[in-house]
Length: 81
Length: 222
Image 1 (cartoon, chains in turn orange, yellow):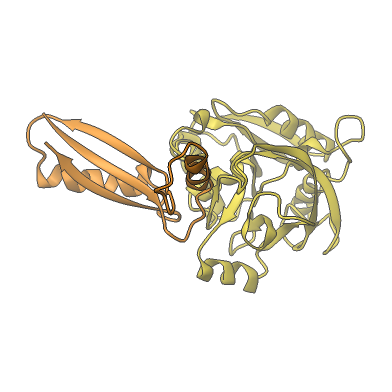
Image 2 (cartoon, one colour):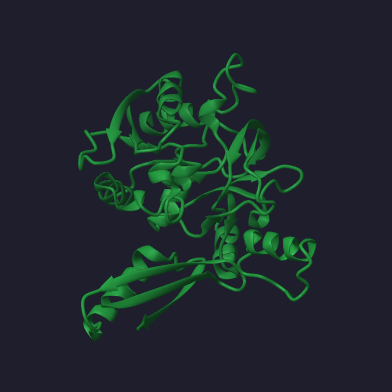
């Protein structure tokens, strides 16, 4: 069984208040490493066997139509073994 | 004049929208998200709430409800459609309106009486107002920040398609203080604040929201 992962992130130019809130909470807890934080969504889709090119194309289509809103978000599709 | 009000699972404001339609002088018709039937209505309202629990993104799942394919088709033929709050989010997800509504810039769910200015009174939902008229109606949402790219923003402004703007401090980070917009044809309107909660002094901060519902009657009678 393989896993197809779709990562959805707000486009860089779109304000991310949740990411900003996380970024400002980190130093309060003593973590000083973060210059900035962006928060996104991750979808894990299980398929039987190795994903075919056709399946991946379908997932990309679904990511465009449903999983992301192309007006404000970008997405990346990848296969995780 | 028959105005349909759609109920999705998780819709909150369908009763108030229906009541406002009647107060505005029209007949109201309840529409169910799972029915592919507009029951011959002359106009449609998508009310506020948390349709499908706001899962995935606000309005993202509702867009694929059976009734929405008919709304999209009818809107394309010029039927007046008003989306309030969650309804506005559904209209953006359906691509009937450009842009998107994102998390309020300060992350807080806002619930307050908000002053807005009607800047376009030529849509079927806004003719009862004078251009520049200021009204106070409730604003209550967590994801009301209107966002779009620069090209879309220039288009909206250039074509006079911003129908209402917040007055005073920006409540949620919306670009250009945008509280409501319309499509190129002018029949589809999305509005973040709630005119249906301000139709009489007893239950609302004012009766100044009623204009949206008298407008639609006038638009159809003409």
